[in-house]
Length: 480
Ligand SMILES: Cc1cc2nc3c(=O)[nH]c(=O)nc-3n(C[C@H](O)[C@H](O)[C@H](O)COP(=O)(O)OP(=O)(O)OC[C@H]3O[C@@H](n4cnc5c(N)ncnc54)[C@H](O)[C@@H]3O)c2cc1C
View 1 (tube, protein in one colour):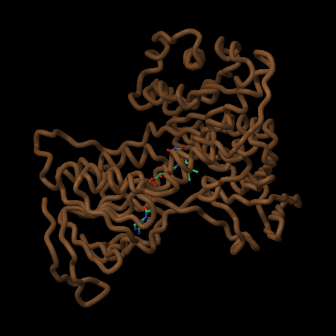
View 2 (tube, rainbow, N blue to C red):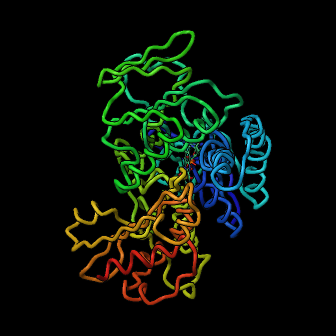
View 3 (cartoon, rainbow, N blue to C red):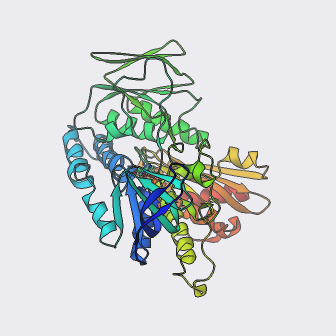
């Protein structure tokens, strides 16, 4: 549907604002969720303006999932080579991070440029604008000195940014966030990492396996606090085995920076020294610059609240990290699919024959921490299930006791943990930690999503000798 050119409207900001163009949809933020939404709406024939202030594609391809997993692939290869001695003879390992840095720079990010992403959008008929977009009234988005009016609606997909804790001495120092860590071309000798979440743990293990001395500080009692305690224990043990010093239950009280690096003073009296300091203490949605108040939404909220069709209000949708359903690319993509369907219906592109549209359902939200052991988890943890008052039954089986775990031998750390609602006889959560924990997770995700009765899981055939066969052992334990 065609763009219409210049009209004038009243906005909260100025007496009148010249509307540059009227289009069907304006998407603010072309990260994972926004790019998917903008591309697919444009491909469906809607006129779409896509606004991105940084790189089209967002955090995941440039500073998140993709570069970190390239690093992990390489670090795991080093770890496997070091296991040869116990399995197959001798291997000499000489890590060379420049190969990883080159692959990230040249193959994954094209030197942190987004020509390909812009082309993906504009080749579908989208109009791309580089800049920071902001709502200035219902259906109105300002970017630079242009204002667009959206006939069907506005989609927000502005993601999150790193939380920088107010530790005295930290502000103004050249600390790293995930961005500097993913843009690394040379490795320092030592790094202190603040934060024991998934990002901190993944980066710590990679760097340690490349020979960097790592000190990690986690204020909570355990790392990977969102996951089962058994996951935290196994990953902490693996990090320590890789040479990482893991401090839990201690906060950074003060940071000093001098010519040779950082000193982090901890509340338990310890001090950590590192040439570099990585801050990985969580991420937050920045809502106060989006003009949410001009459409009746709360700019002081932590996240943009949406209904199950990703609607944040009339003619306004939100997708991705800023909705607060976990910071995962697969959630952003899932939500984008739902918003796209709803927008196409609103635009009259999908007729009545399209049936009932998809609704967001986060019961079976999967998540993977790509450490070694890899921790895949879905749905509720045991604690969450108990807090909801469910009649909880759990089962736990170590991978090393399965045939495949025993065969695998070195590097077989891991387990299957099941969390069942005994009243309904279904799984409400599960964790699979191990060499391919994220892959084994898929069976468990289906079980939680489709509410497959535990008795049905007990009667199916599990291939021998696979890691996923440990699910059967755990299921049997549940039924005892
Ligand atoms: C180190 C790291 C590793 C990760 N690994 C994984 C993983 O393995 N698996 C996984 O599922 N997830 C992973 N994630 C999380 C994943 O990257 C995010 O969940 C995902 O990028 C969220 O997509 P999004 O669309 O919500 O936001 P983003 O990808 O953050 O994109 C938001 C975009 O909006 C733009 N923007 C913001 N404000 C404005 C504005 N006002 N105007 C215009 N543009 C604006 C930003 O520049 C950005 O490009 C990782 C993250 C990090 C940091």
